[in-house]
Image 1: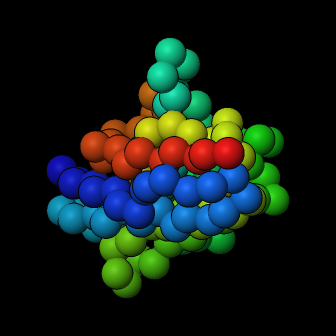
Image 2 (image 1 turned 90 degrees about the horizontal axis):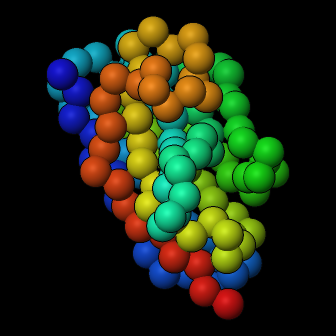
Length: 124
């Protein structure tokens, strides 16, 4: 069992930045690929970014590439999502998730554990 707790969400103006954190507890954090997903009201959940177990490889949705950066610190059991140049369309609830097999990190249904989410609201 892995427990995930997100933090760092909030209200920010367009063009601003936020850093989301995901604290993991339970089983060995480094055994899991980690991903960030988001869901806006009335929309389906979508992939945002993912990072492999070692942190050597990262993946991004086209919509956030060049603006968001995913990272992890296995010594601290933490994953992060640095979000820069935020746009109105980035407004959503953001969720971190852990995937033990981690061979399809873009696919939400592959993930084993999910956090409760943190809200990001971008205003004009």
